[in-house]
Length: 59
Image (cartoon, rainbow, N blue to C red; front, side, top):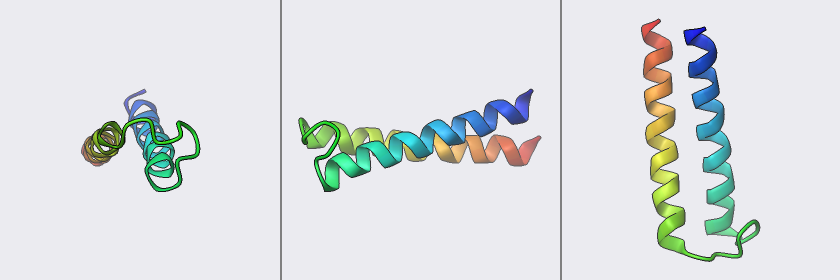
């Protein structure tokens, strides 16, 4: 069960990184409503991805 949750965390991190990265670069999903929010979500997605990868390697 722990490995499934780490894969879920990595999937959510990748999806949010892709979504907010595309918004920051192209303005597609949210038409660049707030660039600072996009940058914050990209940093949060990177942190979540790192923590999920670290937890996966630990199990």
